Image (cartoon, rainbow, N blue to C red; front, side, top):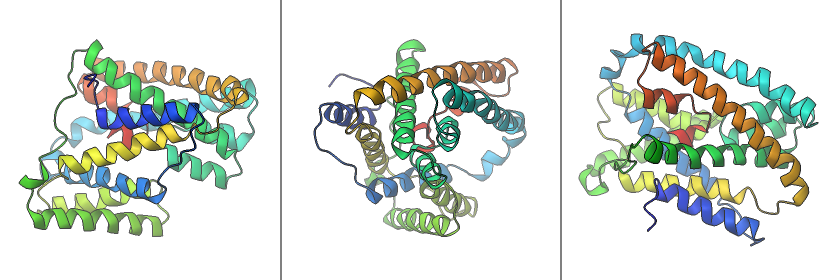
Length: 282
């Protein structure tokens, strides 16, 4: 009704955030939310076609900058959380890494980090980026985000719908069995890309499925703030806001360099170097 971009993502995220800050006893959907991410994995994988390989030489240099980008984030972020805000070493390390919210939380907790602090830091990072970036694109650069994310389900052959569902679930389970990080996205992505390159898969998931994935991703971010205390706001959330401001600056530098050197157009470069999670940026 407010004509905001990505309503299926913004709406649930905002509503759950408001409910969480109002002490409404809500909780996430657990594995259902994780399973919804497989839809985005299939969507990205199905977009990897033979035509894409002709563009790889043009992408090589900008892709090579990603490890440099991540290394600089770690060099800046880890001391920021460790020495400025006094977090323990595992928490500082996994708080600084710009991976997906769920992945960093799982890895950080396994390494002995503070799961609550990690959840709030990454939820705040993702929240700020997911809210500000689409608004900047639409109202700052004048790029409307009203393009349908796919064809309607009625326009996709039933056989391909079934195939995509199988690829999503199978890819997720295989990747999880292999211990691959971001299994719910990367597993379906790899498997779907294989079928797309083999000329077996010819469609992306329908718009309804993408909207469903956005809905559950929005819920996950908002629910992370359940039970937040004043002390956590003063320390953890403010630290996350300062860290995210630094990420924006670093992201802007890399995006500007990539565009200036004609390695990539503005919008793909901006989205590629925006340190949100895999699911949110996809």
